[in-house]
Structures are given as structure tokens and as C-alpha cells.
Length: 179
Image 1 (tube, rainbow, N blue to C red):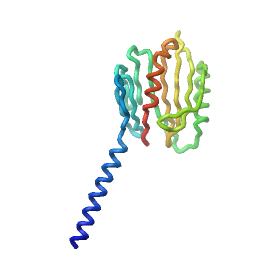
Image 2: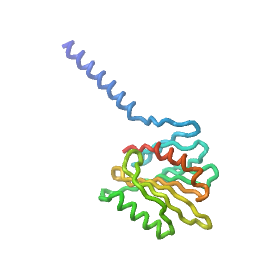
Image 3: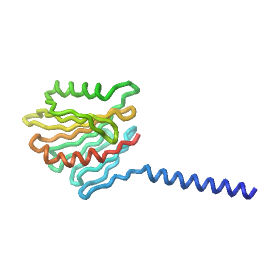
Image 4: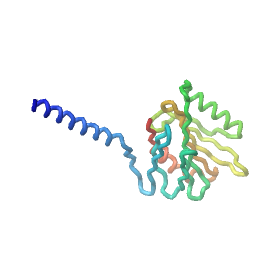
């Protein structure tokens, strides 16, 4: 009897230690470079983490999703997820539909290529669009992950786009989407 109780206790301790190790491995381990801040966003069906330059202004909220502005407020990041409600779409179909909407608003597509977002297949696109008197340049990443269509976009004045591009690539590569 004592032997059985001992085996049950040892088994329970083993499972507790195992669950602690699994939990520790599943936590975010994004290395944050100097000058960047770590941000975790969790609301309803969204659970996203990323890094961004620490001097940028984070306006994220439950109502708007992830929104971050450059320090001069001339550039903006948005990360959104739209439920697919069980409908079967391909990434190419959704991207094509979005691009048609952008073109009808005056967007000019500069480049579109396969890429990844949080390790999942994505489409990366560059385009310009006139906003008021200014031409803005955008970089977009679109991906279907689970039952959600994710969209990452950054835009700024066309003349300022290149000065932010390295930071944007760092941000995109840091994005971790948990399902």
C-alpha cells in the first residue's frame, strides 16, 4: 500500500514538473533589441506579441486593435485580424479582393511577393496612394492563420518611407501570433 501511494505521489510530481516546463517553453521569448519595446496584445480571439521602437507612440486598444505611430506621427502601424467565420478562402483570393478595393481608391501596386508572418505563409505588398496632397507609401503583410485573416500595414509619406523600413522589417519579423 505504501509503495502504491509513493508511486502515485512520484507520478503527480512528475506531471507537475512536466507541465511547468511546457508552460515555460510556450511563453513569449522575443529578444528585444536595445531601443525597442515589447508589446503583448490580447483581446477576444487575438493574442499577438511584437516589438516596436520604444520612442514610437502606442495607441492600441480593444476597439481598434494594434496601432502605433512614429514619434512625429507621420507614420502608422496597424495590425488587424478579421474572422473568416468558417468560410473557405485562399490567401490569394482575399489579397486580390483587398487589392481591387485599394486600386479603386487610387492605390498603385509597386510589388507583391510571397513572404511569412509569424511563420505562416503571407503576401507582402508595397503600394502608394494619395492622401490629401501627399503620396503615402505602404507595406502590407496579409496572412490566414486559423480562422482569421491577419493584416499588418505600415504607411508614411513616400519621401520618408525608406528611413522607417529597417524598423518595420524588425517589427514584422518579431510578430508572434498565438492561436
